[in-house]
Length: 116
Length: 111
Image 1 (tube, one colour):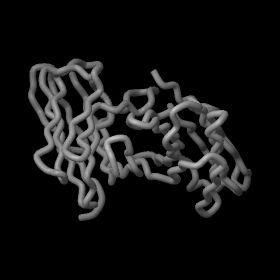
Image 2 (cartoon, each protein chain N blue to C red):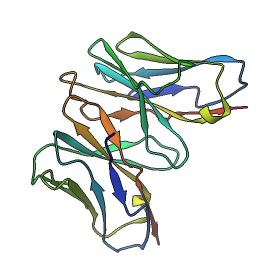
Image 3 (tube, rainbow over the protein chains, first blue to last red):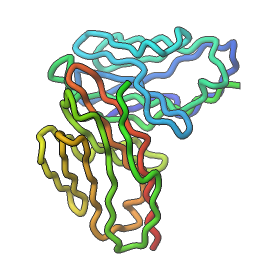
Image 4 (cartoon, each protein chain N blue to C red):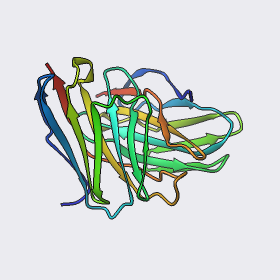
């Protein structure tokens, strides 16, 4: 496989469930990202793992928790979500040359999450 | 809070028309400006990453210009085709910070 792959592509969960989104990149990149795409809103950065440093958007609720066990894998753990968390969650990777440089992003096809 | 504005919000053109979109961003602390194309049911795909004021980049019928002093970038599509139908996203990268995306311009090309 090449590129960035995300699983599952679709997920429906209740507010009391715990689930995880998975992302894998086969590009040898050193940075991985989670973005959220809500209806009619710009792509919003949630978390970054770049050069082994984690950077997060302080506005992301604690019911979302990322995990990056190595440079090729990224998870987003979900627990006690709210209906307003329903959105498309995109994973991306890039070859960052420094903490201040993102580089060209390579995206997965996204995981469509519906919270009932 | 950084503001990245894209206009128009949506655009419908006929096949063969040429079109252009605008991305406006802060003119201070510029590092890079990205353009992405996002087709329905696919992943966003990078078109250009631009870093120098006055830069012009071209990929086939698509080209982009960059003015960092006044804070804008134009994306041009020459002779639009139905396969150009997509959402076009720009993203501003400030030095020391991560990308901030605009809301996108939705292009529909009718054959």
